[in-house]
Length: 370
Image (cartoon, rainbow, N blue to C red; front, side, top):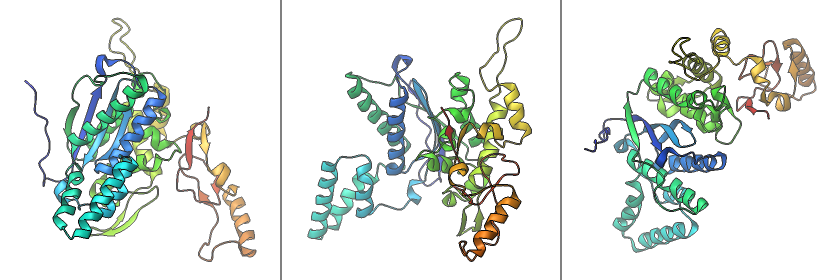
């Protein structure tokens, strides 16, 4: 007997789900190019349908998603302008033009009911878990079948979903489980080195890093308490109904989450007698170093990556050196009137006593070289 999916009723507030789906026969079909397209489709659907991707992992024959589904009844409706802005994410120019003409005809005729019906065709699909996963799997299937000249189903069964309690403990644990998948599969040694996961994307310097960081920030205690303030890659100051909100910046979010990943992702060696119980994971010595550092990325690891400070920091050195250069620039009238000091702490890793003239809040560290 088919089990009914557990879905939170409208009006019950936002909800979180861990969703999984596998390829038919569990064949390895998703490689680098396919994963890039998969992620692009995922992000477009996220924007269009309003279901938020907290984190994700795209593997060779399956995917994991941690999704936040807003309370549909509490969300504002799209107007015609917003619909025409969103449509190109998923539809070609012909469809967009047809919808634009239909909306214009409805406005010209003064038939408000007609315009509402056009909007409702798309509005009723938003903020819906089942619609989101159905669209995702269908669009990935169409792409894959066209690319490989095949027909038929790509997925072995309907997606699985687990309803999650919306607290930091539950959500961070499930997020870590998802982001540790490529480590446990032996694909990478560290979770930040896997490009097609939420944490890996957040640690990179690609266009999607900011979105991935916002997803992980949203399940911090502060983010869960003030969801409307979860945006950007810096400390967010927002005044709303709850008053002044000070959310942690990405460096702090990463430190906390990295500590969890390296605590939970430790390799397990098999029993010396039976050979059972082993599990791939992060090397024990590496885990110990990260835990001892409180989750901060060590300098040696940072230097394996693209460090923006070394190209965009303007001046790098000790506090005294950077302050000396800053004073020279101040005398020359080349600094802003509000800035009183020059040395700025370098973010993203433990850079020791090094300081930078520029405070690079956005993506200070990029992908691993090579």
